[in-house]
Image (cartoon, rainbow, N blue to C red; front, side):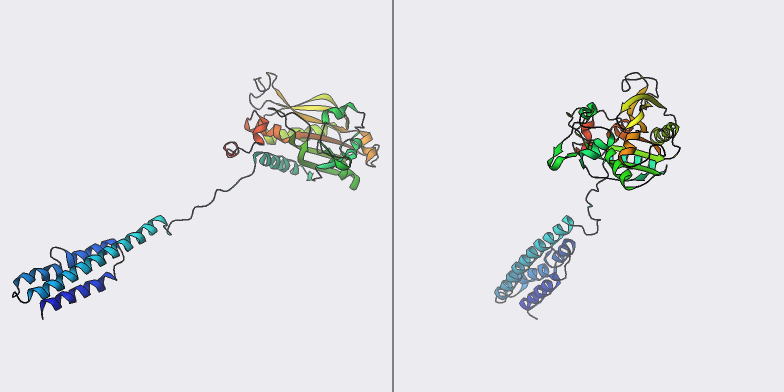
Amino acid sequence: MELAERIRQVAEEAERMLGTCEDLEELEALRVRYLGRKGALTLLLREIGKLPPEERPIAGRAGSEAKEKLEGLFRECREVLRRTQARKEALDVTLPGRRPPLGKRHPLTQIMDEIVDIFRGMGFEVVEGPEIETEYHNFDALNTPPDHPARDLHDTFYVEGGRLLRTHTSPVQIRVMESRRPPLRVLSPGRCYRNDTPDATHSPIFHQVEGLYVDRDVSFADLKGVIATFARQMFGPDVKVRFRPDFFPFTEPSAEYSFSCVFCGGKGCRVCKYTGWIEISGAGMVDPEVFKNVGYDPEEYIGFAFGMGVERLAMLKYGITDIRLFLENDLRFLEQF
């Protein structure tokens, strides 16, 4: 067989083998096999010099064409395999996908849920009501007529139709008593509004939880027991509770209650102003006039009510000194909870 024909056969064989290469390593091995120093085509090209002078031009032309064509095919195949490998490295389908970060409950929601769970354990039912209230439910039915000075402390935002943004969740208790007969044991959590200037301890938007217990033979001792049980479950068994006389239009007698300082254990520190106590909120026995407003006989029924600010409890629980942090939506703050 003439050398030119053998060269063409080797070139065709190498071209067929190129179609089977799946990576750069296989391609390089194939190049060495045919175009390397001891490759099949290289050895044939060396034989051209041994041919008679009249046969050398034909074999030389076939050798040059075969070598040039194969080198071009190897370059093209190398580029294709490089691009394919780059795509595989950029998207490794064997790795698990990147999951988007999951959100979590807001710290105020966490505290409110914890408060609700504690009172549910004491038999309280959770009820909710509208945030846009009537003056009657927010003030009048709670023994706070238009000329009552206590309204100044509840300056709020009024909307059309004589309605307002509720200043506490006590209107929910009025609505419950209007629609049900005792015994009642309800808890009303929710958002409230007052025309306060924002600072470290005040916000025009805040959250409250208020409780109401109405039945026969209810006493102030029951109120103290409920608050003390809550305090110990929320802040630990060593927390003490203190009640001191106060005034609220819708309770009589009324009291302000405090917890022993959770930071210093009641010894006195900067947070509790060295008194050992932190004021929480107000409570008291439901005023007979409130019972009359909802159609209850104050001679037959008696009850107590209490409230607490969710932000205040969260600040104590987590050691936070500025209420505004809860509403700024700064993820650096929120992701800590």
